[in-house]
Length: 443
Figure 1 (cartoon, helix red, strand yellow):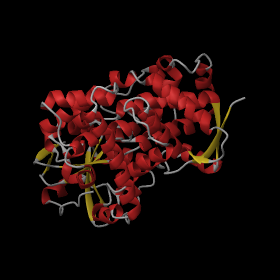
Figure 2 (tube, rainbow, N blue to C red; figure 1 turned 90 degrees about the vertical axis):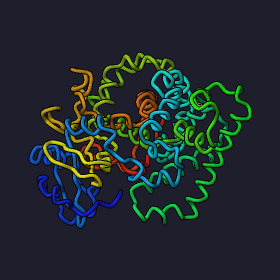
Figure 3 (spheres, rainbow, N blue to C red; figure 1 turned 180 degrees about the vertical axis):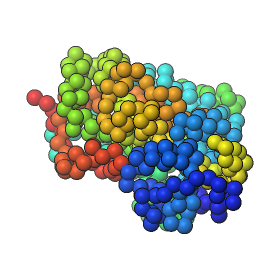
Figure 4 (cartoon, rainbow, N blue to C red; figure 1 turned 60 degrees about the vertical axis):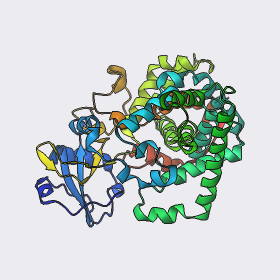
């Protein structure tokens, strides 16, 4: 994250909230982030400051903070926070764009990534998820995080961006994406991270593969009928031609592999919560008895499955904090924040406020059977505003299919059952990088 400026005297007026461990180097070391956020919000209000060793962090939290941050995009400088995206993906990456340039790119990507565009490919996702599950069932221990990341990527190559890649190529593509994102928050240490020979080789192969895909489209524009073809058409119409090929490589990146590990973690989280909740596992399995595994659209009519997935979003968000860099002076909650301040937005704090969600630290999917949706401005799972996660439609539509497919026909055996039980019951723990397990077809 961008280093904070020395604390401005104006910011000294913002209420301070003590960390649970004063020696923490970074807020990401908090052992129980949900309870910390709820406690800080209730005691200090929607804006407060904390100190982790030599850094002071200004934090915004709660529904009013989410609304303010998401509605005032003009206040934030996005590129300064994530130089890795500029260095690794080039100047046309979404997180390097602001204002009209950002809006233009999202308009182009929407042609292949909005909800309607993605829904056209649900039968294809369902088909390929089923094939990969059948292929790997009973083959012995594997990493479920890696399995779903590569399965999602393979399904993408068969649906939204048609290309023939081997399993090894898909694996290296997903490994590159995970390692690329792994350098985002390393500060100056990112240079050493990206200079590793392993990473350099992975990036060269990934960029080579995606560049080849794009060049084939440009050479034979009428050959493909998929989401990437729709994006290319929109690009040509918007700009009166095609930009540099690196811009188009960035476009196909979102379709193929962007965020697949986060979606994989979400899929595995839902399965894990159900594994240790016999009551809800039974309710979802009962619903799935009538599902023949062919009609992916029918999953939208299964309220228990939907409630479990929504509760997993609320209870275990993948990201608790997102940074913002103030491009200009502003005022929030009665406090003046000067330009140049780096803030931390606790986008998930709302998930754990008892005034919004009764018994917020418990797994209670029934809360989404009663009202069916999040309270306004309280869902920070994908962020919000014009910079909301561009791949959210993929995650939201792929996850129910993956969960339903695996839960209906397969039984999971986790390599470390006690550790997985602790993980499922402790919503302060992050989802691990790996999840060793095996699965076999139900009798």
